[in-house]
Image 1: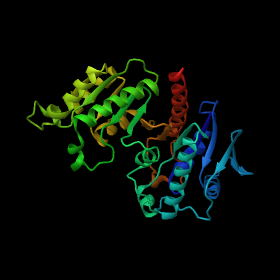
Image 2 (image 1 turned 45 degrees about the vertical axis):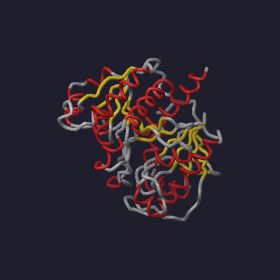
Image 3 (image 1 turned 180 degrees about the vertical axis):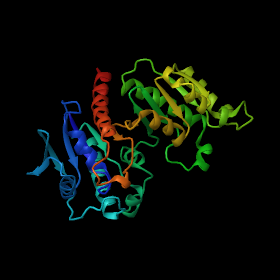
Length: 327
C-alpha cells in the first residue's frame, strides 16, 4: 500500500509533525510512504529541527524507512510562521500532483499536511480549502467532510460557508444528501454494517417547534424522514448544545452538523489534540491532520504529531475497509 504525504505550507508545522509521525513505528507498518513536495524545503526543516533523518538519492531516510521524494524543486528559504506565495505555490503543486497520481491508481491514499489559505490565494489558488479542490479534480460536486477521533465522527452539511449564508444552503436535498453520503461512508470507509446517525438542528433549541427559525420543520425533519424511508437509521434534529452536554453522541456512530463550527468545536475539544479530517464520497482516499499550520509554534520543535499519526493510520484503515467492502 502506497501512501502519499503532501508538503502542506512550507512555513507551518506540517513537516515537523510528519517527521515525528514517521519515526518510532507509530503507524501501521504495512504502508510505504511517498513525499510530494520540495526536497530542499524538507532538508531545511530537518536541519532546523536537528531531526535524525537525511535525504539521499531522492529518498528521505528516517527510522529505517526510505521514502521516495516527488515534487517541484525550489531554492525557497523557509520562514517559519510567515505567509508566502511561494510556499502556497509549492503546496498547491504537491496537492495537484498527488491527486492526479491517486486518480491514476499510482498511490492508494493521500495524507495532506496543513495549508494556509492566505498563502494559497496569493499563489493563485481558487478554492476555499483542500476539500473543495480535491473534489473538483475528482469531478465530485458535493463532497462530505468528516472529522473523527476513534468512534467520534462528525460530518458537515455545509463546510466553508460564511455563517450568514448557511441557512440558505440548508435544504431538504442538501441535508438528505449528506445523511445518505454519511451513511454510505460509515459502511464503506469505516466498516460499520448498520450505522446509526444523529442529525443536529440549525437553530437554538432545534428551532423550538418553529418559534426560533423554521429550517428544522421545513427542511431538516423532512430530510430525516426521507432518509428513514430508504432504510437509514437516523434521529433528530437534536439541539446541539444539549446533544453534547448530555453526551448523546455516545449513542451514535456519527453526528451530522449543519455548519462548520457547530460540528467541529465539540469534536476538536473531545479529540484532545488528535483527530482526522477525511473527505468522503470521493473515488480516492484523502485524510489530513485535524489542525492548521500553527504558525505561532512553527520552527520551535514542540508541535504534537498525534493528529498526523491518526491521519496516516486512518488512511491505511480506510483503504483496507474499501477493499473489504468490495469483496
